[in-house]
Length: 325
Image: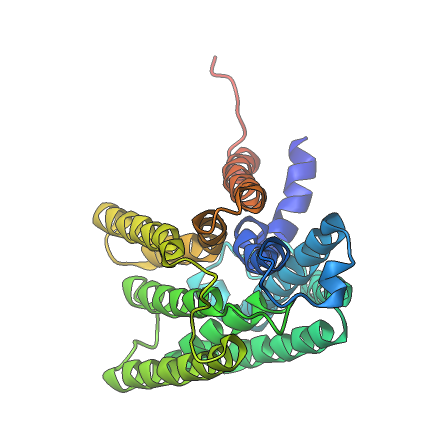
């Protein structure tokens, strides 16, 4: 059993399986929202396709694209990780670079395959996002102002892949803002290099405002004179707001326990990557779509369970249980 764990653990770590649930949740939210709200714009690909197939395609499209970005990050950063993060699979020698290349390629192919369920537009959007992820890994990580903004745009675009004509764009704006804040906190609290300068912070803020404006214009045109559809109750905002508050409290608690440093930055990134699943449940629960909310809640619960199980498996592989004589 331990030998099997030792063989698959580097692959799971490279693909960041434990934190991919947030990426899948963004895709699932758009699918479930489109199916649950009669007033929403429903493409034929979503209306005529069984829900199980749509959700399966969402797993491949969301999880595959996330794994593509995570694996690409480790491949391109292998030399730096040998100094800063020697426990990463490729940097630590647990996984050869050739295997990493294969995993990255297969992840991209799976994401495109999953996107075919939603039509040609979704496939093109997935390819565009994969190019944005490539730019982020080559350039954005080393220039925080560009990296944080690009990452937030990737998250927002990722969420609307299944339905590019979705009317209610506030959830996409919400996850975009969430990704920007989390990236900034993880970078600052984790004391990552290079530090975020005032100029970089202003650039990111201006970029966020510009992207918010673009989403606002799209929403205004689709809704017809407003960014918030009349058929969506304002109370729907309560659940995501509470979820954001819970995340803030969790970050504060971990900051007090760990103090600034790489470990805290990693914790913030991990929480932030998972939290879109919590937001997804909140948006659906807020409009009373309880069946869809239950599905999203199941995804969030599966994510928590996976995090717990993988943590125990990693511990078992590195520190096997033994007997004292």
